Length: 405
Ligand SMILES: [Zn+2]
Image 1 (cartoon, rainbow, N blue to C red):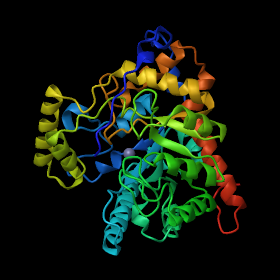
Image 2: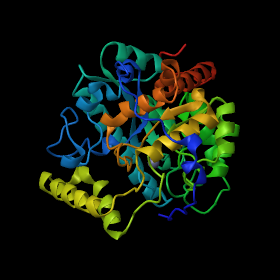
Image 3: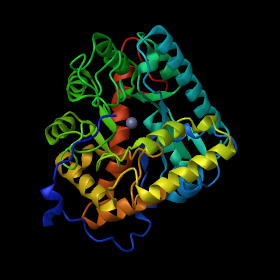
Image 4: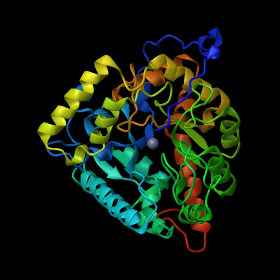
């Protein structure tokens, strides 16, 4: 992984951007809001032996940041559960492996949700999410991080749509057959010809395009080609930390003008401390579903031990809030959402797991944002973008999302 370059941020210290003090007494404001996160990597933990999504866990115990009891506490009403596939070789064999992996991950998500029908339900449309939340349950969308498993057949998107996937990104941390990655050298100068077909298929099916991890040029082309607004499921502002995974202000403005949204992440607020030891632990964490309970415990112990010497990110909650306030200022409240990258490398000091989410609401409220503003940012903007995709699909000749009008 390329190392980020650091720029000094005079504005961070500027008095005008200092973060207001913690607001006291919000009368259950966060709990009243419909809240969603657009990038939950928690499915990585679903296959773990001796572990259940339905039980309460702590980061200290088993490295998990999201589970049903913590969601049910009022912290988070739902979100997009990610089918993440690691980038491999662009060969028939590579594609075949990746497709098998993504199908299995999709099945594991379905099985996990099906085990708790009284507590969580799959959502296919924005209306589903609202209805499920109104019934007192958590709602779960599915998304695809990295379209690599589709091989050279964007038609496979239809299969994942049938499997319930409603958002997908073309690329992850290395270039693939569809697009250039933000963290690789340009190969296609944006999207490949296949990537352009992918955009048309996404629109036709009514799936939301996720531009996180795409290169600047790929972002520009996704924005230009997509017939419905796009979003970034877990990205930040380059003004806060100069890293290619983050977006510059000019692009954030264009995204907002086109009706899209940027879901603010907790990663790349600072350089990533990815030394040899952390990298090895990370590789093991990505395969935690294959480890025995004793091996999981050992990994947790070693991860926490390293945390005491060096955390993955040096950033803290105030830096996160400064970034978030900057994004809101540039994009406007109609074009901001949340995707902290929980269970995918996200989480910083002071924002350790989803139980810390009410702190964000309290800070934003103290900074003058109304309950209506917060409602848009916490779910309204994402559901609006999803609805736009649904309407477009309903008008497309061979498209159509069941349940969309
Ligand atoms: Zn990611």
